Each structure stands twice: as structure tokens, then as C-alpha cells.
Image 1 (cartoon, rainbow, N blue to C red):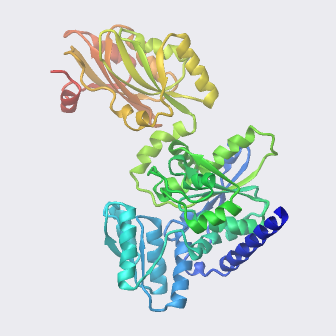
Image 2 (image 1 turned 135 degrees about the horizontal axis):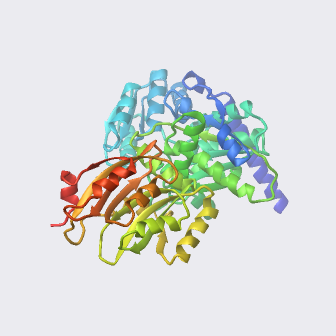
Image 3 (image 1 turned 45 degrees about the horizontal axis):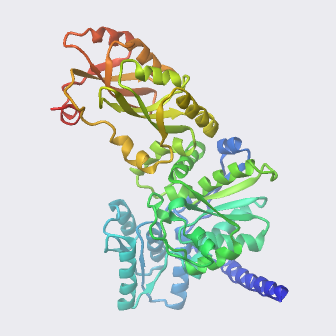
Length: 522
């Protein structure tokens, strides 16, 4: 009985493979899309000890793989209904894919976008020939309106991922990939609604079943992982929005049907790990990926680290899909802030130190010469101070364990905030404020060269002559660092002569209006 069931499943799998294989091989996507390169990541490969290859779907005319599925679907629509018009809902890559495909095929396309969509994306869709309708404040509202619009106007609704034609179009990525490199051990594919993963997985398993297919999701939007655990698609209560291109609450029904058959494993990653992958792509290829675009590489790195701790053979041949590069430029500020944390090259702590002269210097000495990447502090009481501090790590978790032991042995009360999302997203920027009493305070802005020991030189030169009442510093990887520091000083103090000894550029900013407004008492 069990053997019969196994045979039936294999027959079903074979039928599915044959259906999709035919559609993928005969897909007309190249009337609009291009064959994208498979680039080697030399630096990352050396670091991981495995060959890492990146399938560059950011090289498509709309900077995303979504063009493939959209064109394949619209081509079918044109064949069966030459005079039909189409409607879709999207705030991003699907919208541009449908707009360009419709323009190529001379089909009237209406794209419903939430009113919150950035103007740059709205303008891009219009430039590609799409008729944009702004409706609702979120995707679900826009999507419901798009379906209603299609019904009332007799148009054809184009789904973003849960459609066999869309899936087949996305599967052409795998066709190219295996023709470009046929000795892969594993392929890492980003998962949102699951269209790309489903199309690539069925093709890969049909052609090279020994290649592992690994889906990658954000930890806060893991709809495929939840579906795998439940045995059926489930709707997540909420999803994180950092990787907005894969912020999907429910995996597509057909996509899950293919995933449960042909996807070997699902890896989930944090936002910080995605940021680190964006930096890796830039360092190796000078390309800038959107968060969803770097998702697969983040999963590859995590899988590689687990592999290196196992007894499996290595080195391996890995490929990941860079699925898109439609990035809001402002997102780069967040990425640059978080990528070192994602790579375990930085840790952030809340530490309580005595409120007395020299306590900051003694704290830095406790760290054994390690570089301080960030320091936020404002005088709060006469007895103790709470500081928010970032520490550079050269050896990842092993060095982090050493640092925590040093702090414990020195008697400091501390918290490791490296995995505290609230602290990293909000609290680090809110440390400080007004002191509890009026201070005889002078505030200076310093500019000094970034080299090992520069901050300690700063503190050693000042010695313990003045109580530091305010300190803000963040290393941004530039050649020079910027520090804002306040000192409790007598009216006729000779602090300037000590500051001159530093040899750093500085200026007094005690009269600055923003300082007077937000950082002084009374």
C-alpha cells in the first residue's frame, strides 16, 4: 500500500515537472526580459571557503525578476484574448513588470498602487506606460480594489505570484542558471509569495535533482516556513516590512504545492543579516541590492556557516538569486547602521558606569584596546551613568564572549543589546536629553582621524581634569570621526590649552541653538 502511494506521488511529481518544464523551455519572456549574468563573488567565496555565485536579476530592464512572470502571463492573455485589458495591484516590482510587459504587447494595463507608494515608484510605472490608480493605504486595500476593478470593467486580473503562468515565467531564471553552471551543490532563492522559488525549484529538480533547493525568508515574514510546519498555507498575523519585496503574509496555494514537493529546506534570516549581505554584494560587485534582493545571499551565508560546523564535504558550489535592486535610497542609512551587527563585527551594549572623572577612560581600558564604534551618554545623576556603546569585533561570537567576560570581571552592570530590535532601531538615537540639573557646561565638537587608539588618545590627553557630561560618537567608516562632548568646567578654566594638545580640529558649540533647546536644563 505504501509503495503504491509512493508511486502515485512520483507520477504526480513527474506530471507537474513535465507541465512546467515545457512552459519554461518555450517561454517567450526574452521578448522583454534579458538573460542575466551569473557573477562570482571572489571576496565572499574566500571568506566562506565555498564558491559563491550571484544570479543578477537586478540587470533586468525593470531591475527585478518580476518582469519574467508578468510577461509570460500577459503573453498568454494576448494569445487567448487579443483585445483584453489587464489590472494588477502592486507597490513595487510586479507593477513595473506588468507595465513594461503590457507596453511590449500593446495591452492596456491599469496598476492599482497604495497612496503611500513612494513617488519614484509611481513615476517609474507611469514611464513604462502603465495607467496608475492610487487607492488605499496598504497593499491589501489596493489589491481588493484591483480585483473589483477587473470584475466591473471586464479586465483580466494579473496575480503577483499565485498563478501557474507567472510561476513558469519565473522558472526561466533556473533555466539560465543551470546552463551557466551545471556543477552546483545548492541554489538559494528568496521567498515572498513563492512564485520565483516554485518556478525555479520545479525546473532544477527536473533537470538536476541532486541540486539542493533552499528557500530563504526573513524571520519576521516566514510564510513558507509556517506553511511547511502546518502542512498547508497559513496566514501570518503580521510581517516585517524592511524587506518589503517579500513581506507576504500567506504563501500562494500553487506555490506551496510545488514547494512542499521540490524545495529541500527553508532558511530564515534577520534584518541585520540581510544588511550584511547587501554590503557583501556592494563590496564584491559594486552593486546595490534592495533588501529582498539580498535575502537569498543572506541565507546562503547562514547555511554556509552551519555547513562549516558539520561533517559534510566542502568546498561547495553555491548560487543565490539577487532578485531586485528597486531600493529607496533612504534605506541605505539603515543598512549602513546595521550591516556590521549582521556580520557579528560589532556589538552594542548598555553599561552602567560610575558618574565620576575618568570612568569612561577606565571603561575603555577594560575593553583591552578594542575600538569603540559608538558612544552615547548624557549626565543623569551624581552617582552613576548609563551609556550606550558599540564595540568593534574582529572574531565574531568568540570575541563577543571575551568582551562580556571582561565586563563581568570588572564588575560592570551591562546588557548585550546586539539582538534587541527596539534598542537598535529607536533607543540608540534617544539616549541623552536634558540633564536633571543646571550644569556649568561647555560643549565642543571634535574632528579626529580614525585610527586604532584615536579615542583613547583623546581621553588620555584630557586625563581626569574635567567631568564629561555629554558624549556622542559614531564611527561611520570615514577617514575622520566626529565627536560631540560636554565638560563641566569652571568659568575661567584652562580647558582650551588641554584641547589644543590633542592636535585635533575642534570648536566650541555651547551657543548652538539646537544644543540650547534640547540638551540644557532650565
